[in-house]
Length: 307
Image 1 (cartoon, rainbow, N blue to C red):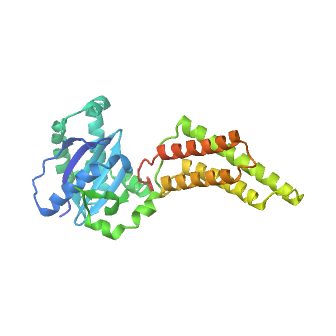
Image 2: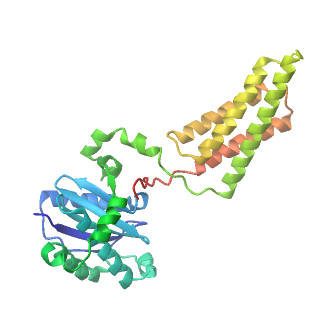
Image 3: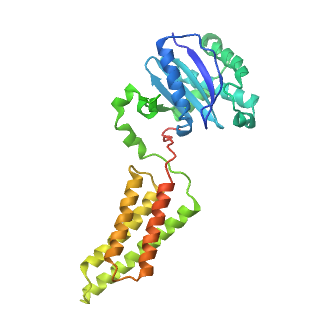
């Protein structure tokens, strides 16, 4: 039998449960799903605003808006359009009943437990499709889900519960590598923008000196060909630092330190062609940009593929 089993209202930023329906079923599957509820509540800030997690014979669906997430557990054969229409009703009623100030300042779990009455009434309606079909229009929700299907959360994205890795994650070892390419970085700071500009400047200076070294070599003025390589390697290192500052990649911090090491080696080799102030400028900029790369970490938010 397809039905909604439970629902919860959770604050996104810290996973604080604000309200929840009363669960009467105590099966093993339900107990396992409660663990997934807790795991998801800790990751809501990192997930898109409409998601589905398939857990065996059950589905967990949720939507998030204005810092609050509305989560429900249903059987696997419960219609998707009804599930998200149910969540949409919870969202509209909760926003109407409670203002953002109350939800943001709440400190106790289930401090809006009186909202449980509305959850229970709505759940009963949605578990009785005959009476439901005459009361709501599902065409808009059906169109919206078709245009913006919910993001499918994999077990490996969910991580571990109580320090024990989920058994499903064994089959998903490569998923983290795939999703990491889509992670977003924190907003750029003023120091980060300054570092980006200075790194571009150092790259441009290296490039110009590299072309001058080529001209000197062609005129047989005795410039070492290795100097040309050092200048162009310095340019590549500076540009790669800019890339690491803007985009997320795997092993990002390690790459930034290796790139800084390459900048130091290039400047050591170019010691005879640069004065101390020039060397100090290039190395200091390289160190500053490396620090900015380290400070600007990933937000960890999963990609909004279809949202």
